[in-house]
Length: 420
Ligand SMILES: [Zn+2]
Image (cartoon, rainbow, N blue to C red; front, side):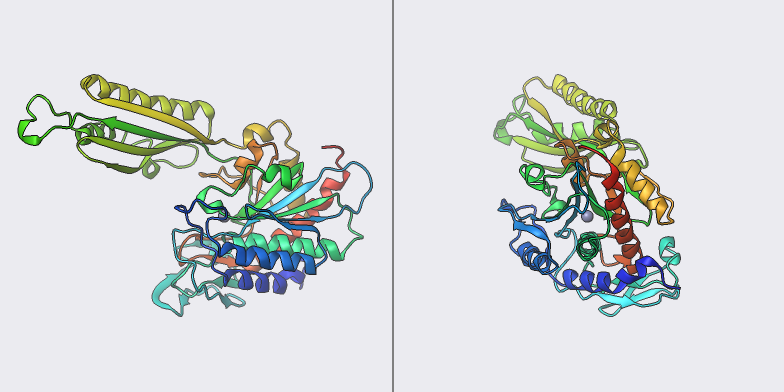
């Protein structure tokens, strides 16, 4: 039996493979936007493909976002809805020479990789794979990531655009398409993006399991602790030297270890994470990220770190310890609570295509966190991507097809909403 979404299988598979073969690894150390020129290889291809299928206003901004319009098919004041995906892949694992492999009509076996004979992708270890019997699974070849994160999202948004442009009989308001660089290094939302996107609400196609609609992300701060010791020749140091490295060690040691760290928390619990330290006996720097779902929890953790620094400072007045906390992004729920339509309509549309939606809070941020904060409420929708950022990354073509069907349904649901 073929279903409505089956018509997208081949297109999505071809798009995913075509996009995955293009190396678009981001680079955190680069100051440019996009961070790597090679992301433009895919961005320019998308410009061409969008023009080819008849999208309007196709542009590539100077910060490397591809934007386009699918004009409304209904009259009147209907909100403009954006659908977004990111083109870059994580610098955490190689994205060079990706060779996608299709495991057609998957039968439930362990999946092996042509370029890494010892690597095994097993449904015993990854139960979601075990639910994909009969579907078409795409993996890489063993030595790279696949880049379904987020080229699956790119493929879905392109398939949505293609379908709407070829079916003007489907009622929908103005749709904006956006493909952005550098999500993986936290720079996906350029300050000008909300202005250029011109959408009232948007969705990122950057989620995982079938049915997932995410509207909660971490709230995030970073903290930098600088420690200035007293430097002096070790031979004449008695009663003079204040060793910054000792103080750094004391700060780390005084912070919680068996609780409130990434490796000891899950679900809704927040953490303080030291991810970098550097220095000499004269001066040292500690870099932390602080994460919690709630503003109160986030500021409590920030207070804890500040308090620990003050305590260690008190033990050694000749040193100077400074703790600077900088906001990064906030849980998008705070904005969405004011108008839950983007979430409610996405859930309605998911149910309408026969999938039960679920919402798990993301222990991280998305481009949508930042966009939401900048005035464009942007929940995240599933694509099917699994085991991202590594060689075991995989995705089901049929999950991508259901996500495409969802976005088509969702675009139509917005057409009977009024105003913005
Ligand atoms: Zn992603």
